Amino acid sequence: VFGSDVAAAKSVQDEKARIEKEASSAQNFRQQLAQFALENEAVTALLQLFRRKAGAKGRATVQMDSTTTTQLARAVAGEAQPVVLPPWDPFNVAAMGDPYPDLGVPERQDSPDAGLDDEPKLEDCPEGVDEAGFQRMLELRREKLLAEAEVQKGAKVLAEMAGLLTHLQNERDQARTEYDRLQNELHDHKELMDRELYDIELLFKLRQGQVEVPQAAVVTDYSDAIVIDQEVVQSRNTRILELGKDKVSTLNTIKEFRKKLSLLQWEYNMLDAQTKDLEERTKDVHMLRVTKDLQSLLKGGEEGRNKADADLLERKIEHLNSTTEVKEQALKKQYAMGNHAAKLRKQENMMLEKKLRELQQNVIQREHIRRLRAPAGGGKGESDGRPRVTGGGGRIEENEAAIKEAQKGFREVRGRQKLMEAAKRHTEEIELLRKELDRLRQKTFPSFVQLHEDRPRNPDYKS
Image (cartoon, rainbow, N blue to C red; front, side):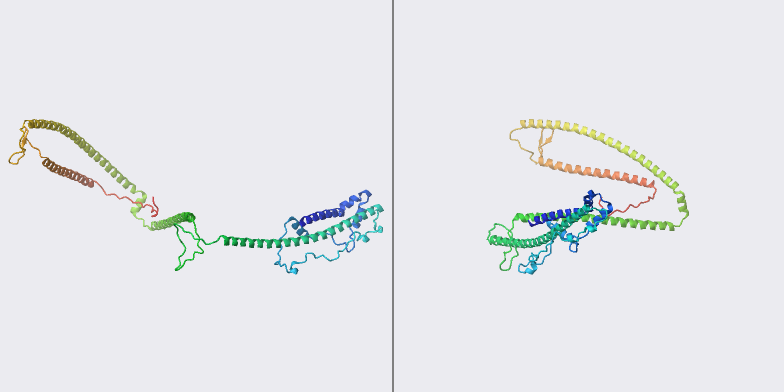
């Protein structure tokens, strides 16, 4: 509320200062004397008399101190700078200061007519100025002095109000600081009371749990123990695992980066070694002694030799191609003959198989007829133990065990015979190939092939 009063007083004071400035301006003075049609020299002389200061009491310029004005404006706008105050002591009156320093001091009364005794006399009127114009100048001067007196008085009142406002703001800041301190103490005390009210010791019986409190030798102190839900622990563990995975991925990135750095360092070392090798080779070439053979080689004598070797190799390739074609034709002919013989054997086997089935059918029919004609009490075989002959064709009685044994021996003999035939055939083919190899070796000439070194690769690189 007092701040609004100070703002209103400041606005009134600003208005008084504006009126005083307008009354003291030379432009307004010349406009007021324009009706008297005075010369410029006369108006200038009257302006000097108009601007003459009053006595010693009124010579001080009536202006507010810049510091006081600035502080007042900030105080009214609510932007006062924080004031560093000593520790507040309600029992130390001297430290608190006097809130009413002007109480009991008689106020000096400044008469509105003060300084009018020093106003210009009629004898000071300049030449060319009539009495009406001179009186009008005196009236304007009196108005200016009265406005300056009002401004000075308002400035004093405003300065007192600014001091009082600053004092009240300091008291407010101190009270607010003390209030905040008491509020913090009250809040802490309430929290302590709440903890004391609800922090009680209870016994719980859990079906399953995990105790992670270090066990003492005699009695374990569980006063600082806290019961935590398993989901909380699992969520924390999950978060720890996520952070661990992030760290592992970061470490993998660092590993790959360092691997690339190592690869670049290895390539740099390899290129450096190759450079040194080339320098050494260049030095060897420079130090090489030139012989006649080397001169002929440099002049192009090697081209004729290479051409002769190339012709020889071409003839050799043509001979090998022709020999291969002849062998291929012979093998194809042999293969065709084998296929034809196999077809003939298959046809012959089919005919024999058909004839065998017919003979077996005849034997079965005759056996059936014989059993029908044989007496009811006939024996199973001869008295000397030999197999009994059955049927009219001289077929003996079959024994299944003997038949199987004979077939087994026949298969073994037949398999052995096939292996011997295959071994003999392979031996003949090897002998033929060996003869062909000897023949080709006799026609082969030795040749020298220049080997080119491949560029070494990174042993850690995987293609």
